[in-house]
Amino acid sequence: MISKHISYKEATLSPTATRLGIDNVPNPDVKYRMLLVANKCFEPLREFYGKPIRINSFYRSPELNKAIGGSSSSQHCSGEAMDIDADKDNKKLFEWSLKNLDFDQIIYEFGDENEPAWIHISYTERRPNRNQVLRAIKENGKTKYINY
Image 1 (cartoon, helix red, strand yellow):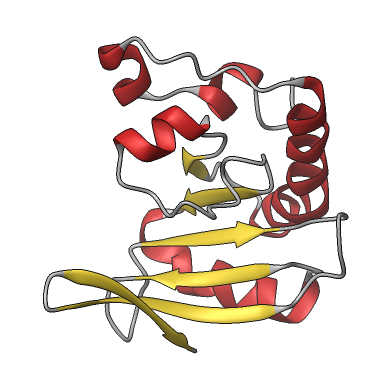
Image 2 (tube, helix red, strand yellow; image 1 turned 90 degrees about the vertical axis):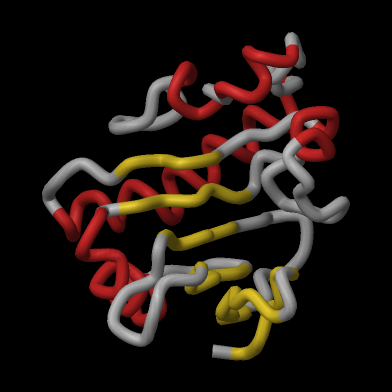
């Protein structure tokens, strides 16, 4: 288990990794950072929400991250980020997180003004958390991050 509500399998699951035969097993340092973001961000959010929250993406090995076209500086590769989705309550979770969590980044991922498609949240102890709040949008077919 990574935390009370996140299994190790859920945190490392990737259909892309399985399909391409990519090893998506975190080393002990990365696993420690996964425990941190899960317990500092996900678990308080899950307790507030009181219902399951889907994890779309948590740990990504550098090879997996490259295969899916992720950013070369993605915190998913260091075990410090997760993408979560609660269907029609993402904005509620996003707003609660802004007010109640210590975080490095929260990104309102795509969607529209009423609801993000999902939320990216990260946490680190390797430097001070930036408390950076961004919005991911598509512009000319490419992802662009703007201040929220």
